[in-house]
Length: 418
Image 1 (cartoon, helix red, strand yellow):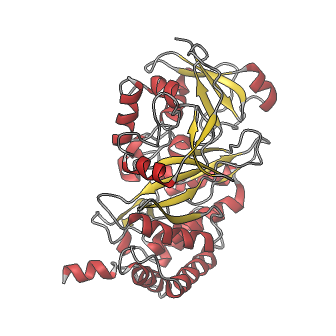
Image 2 (cartoon, helix red, strand yellow):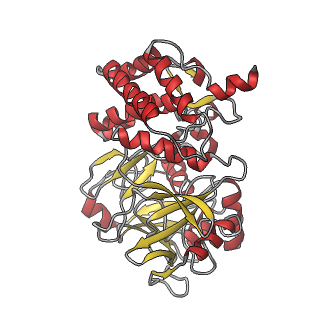
């Protein structure tokens, strides 16, 4: 088959040449002319080059591999595509038309290409069926018109919301929302996530909407995509996550599973590429995550936005989910001042982490973030279907940290251990 075309914001920037073992990204001369040699417009790990350095091919391959989902969702997409789960090229050939960020990847020799994207209106009942069948049709993809790939392990579908209501995206139309049903294993999770999103908005770390909705009796959390915008020519904003940026793969998003990922390494990239404002927001996100018990702040849950003028900034906060009450090892994904155990983290550790990045204002930023978290936890209740002691747990974490104590265990955990 032909090399795959790689487009950024609707314009060709290169191609993927080779099979899943040997493939590499080859930049288009017009893209180099437009953006310049060594431009980071696609990725900080993959500068545009007239001649690709073979020694960096693994980084480029990893960037494209990390556009795909993980676990059962990946296996299901591979089954739909009729390729093995390790066949990155085969999967992107099938599902590369609607990816995270502003890339589109497609096969010019495939019948019907270039496709004409479209939407099909959906009723609430239609959406409910998609949510119920999400494990059969991951992301809401249906053969042959579903062309979406999105990283992650949680069950989810993607939809398009317009003035007429909800729609299914066909042949690469940019989806505008992510919709997650209740988790079979952790039934409070979507309600806990909605509560966590309120704290992120309060701290100015995100502006996109998150809401709880019911589709013909099926509850779900609806999340507006921050990498989509009606103000851009093709409706997309480019982004990359920090597995891509640091060359980490799969579970290496957790610091203890690989050597590439740490808060210090993430902060170093952000300080260089995104500047002081982005570095400050990263620190506030870390402080928020400790205060609410978001243990899953891993490298794929932190991303960069890339703009057409070459500027880069930290992406809005997403997947801020309080999890300290869940049955897990209660370790944070990325160590703070060398400490992984959430219950043992202190304000001084947060401040020390910030100082190690060069943030002189780390103490003020920490106190401000914790005070705001405590205020909201005391003022607003989560949805009734959220974890019963969620607000109390978060208030305990925040007040303990503010008073110089370790964050401690959630109330619900203490009750179970008595």
